[in-house]
Length: 74
Image (cartoon, rainbow, N blue to C red; front, side, top):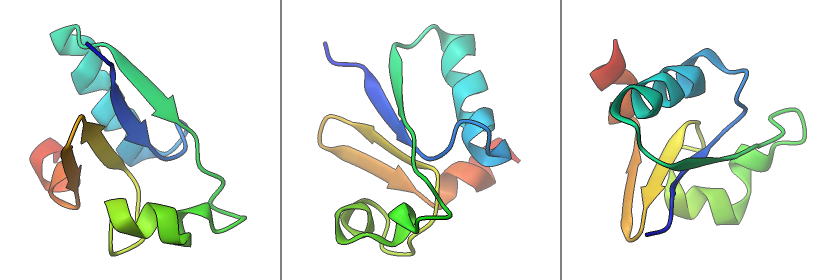
């Protein structure tokens, strides 16, 4: 099974929260680093994952989550 993907800079507090949760449950994951200064989070490719152009975005196969991740982890 392919690991889940977390899109965003690993040093970001919100991305780190997602990574901690994935570590806690022992899930395999891959961090897809994004350069926010280069506006990679506003690229058309990322906007298909998160129409708000924010990070983190979470992809597990065909399932894509965004936005609510931060609320779930608060």
